[in-house]
Length: 71
Image (cartoon, rainbow, N blue to C red):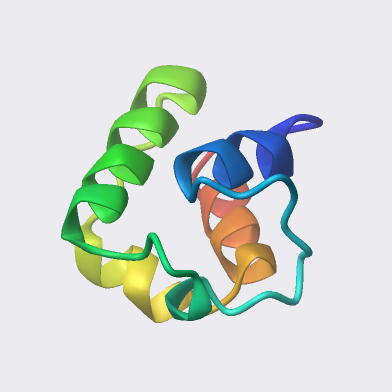
């Protein structure tokens, strides 16, 4: 999970993200980005996520905690 923020930043088309950043505040946030996060978490961590879980996580930190809880 050491490169989690970097990978999420790439998916969100940002140079960097902070753990307290709201996911929905990013310009690139849309359904395609959510699908990309689902695919990323599945391939990198073998963690299946739903779109509802991702949207409910709220922040980058919440998303990271969600993935860690399912590992």
